[in-house]
Amino acid sequence: MKILMISDVYFPRVNGVSTSIRTFAESLRSEGHSVHLIAPQYAQAIESKPSADEARLSADERWITRIAARKIVFDPEDYLMKWSALVAYIDSLHPGDYDLVHIHTPFVAHYAGLKIAKKLQVPVVETYHTFFEDYMHHYLPWVPRKLAVSIAQWVSRKQCQQVDTVVSPSAQMRDVLQQYGVTTPVAVIPTGLDASRFVPGDGLAFRQKYAIAEQRPLLMFVGRVAHEKNIQFLLEMLSLVIQDHPEVLLVITGEGPAEAMLKKMTRDNGLQQNVMFLGYLDRAVGLNAAYRAADIFVFASKSETQGLVLLEAMAQETPVVAIAELGTASILRQEQGALIAQDDELHFAEQVQTLLIDHQLRERVGKQGKRYVEQVWSSEAQAKKLLECYERLMLVNYPLPVSAAA
Picture 1 (cartoon, rainbow, N blue to C red):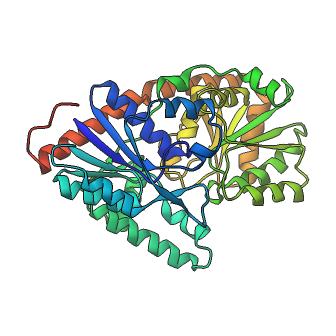
Picture 2 (cartoon, helix red, strand yellow):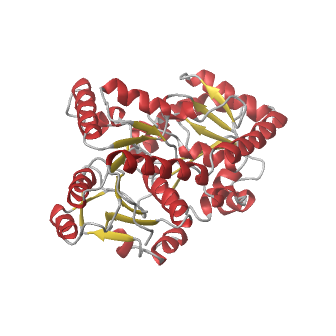
Picture 3 (cartoon, rainbow, N blue to C red):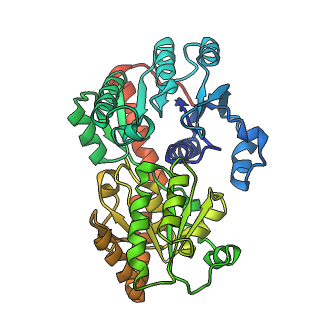
């Protein structure tokens, strides 16, 4: 099968969407299918020295078409593909080039994906990666929150109705879309973990690199440093943990628009000795080591459509303390890699302290988490589900022979 994916984000922009695209593409290609991606051209990919992970990704971009893009004023991490450049690319396509279009983001990529599918007369799938209802008010603060939520729901419903099938990373997100009034078929297909996520990281080397004592209690957060990730909750929780564990350290990796606010909050609460901001870590080398170095992975986001970082932490035998809400509820199983916390700083802190005190419980939960992820969340199993979704969609909507893989 010849599959065309299109997204408003991809590496070197590090986030869950980029990771999901790469994971599925690699699994599908390993099964002999052709996957091509349309994504923005990032200026920093040229201006800055690439990390080892970025270098590996850029070493073979033959499967990617980079489209000229411009910066977004209110979100400098992201770039918006230029419509004129996209149209020029679309004009170069011909019927038979691809069997199916898979859209991954709802901005320029959504409308370009629809245009491509119409021109090629092929079905179109869209993954609903992001719970925009919970994001809009952070990026449009001048819009009343209720209005921002209504806009997000209306746009989501309209866009989902424009495609043949919607892919949801969790059953919980599927239910939300159906509550919006989406009647397009929704397939629940999470992103799995590839084999590299299970390679044991060198936690001791990570601690040595960042001058963290081997015995110091270490909590880890990995993800975009954005308002919707609820990291301020973790700082408030940390203030409670410190009362009984004054040496505890919270390491926050990633970058994003909430970073300045969180650093100020750290200073205002006198937490400078207990919080470390590291920025983005190289996924190929540093990320596994970071997870492995931690005693506990902590996560308080309530807007995840899945929560891939929870699985990545469990794959490194690192126990998780997290709030089970929306997409994370589809992953978290009590004591199978995690202790589930209530949306309450005190209860969350108590779960963290339980694992810090009980070393045997911490080790047992961590080992059970790795077994759970290996059995349920492999990238191969999830890619098989996606391929079955593609084939079912083509059979129902376009009962024509599927071209051989290129």
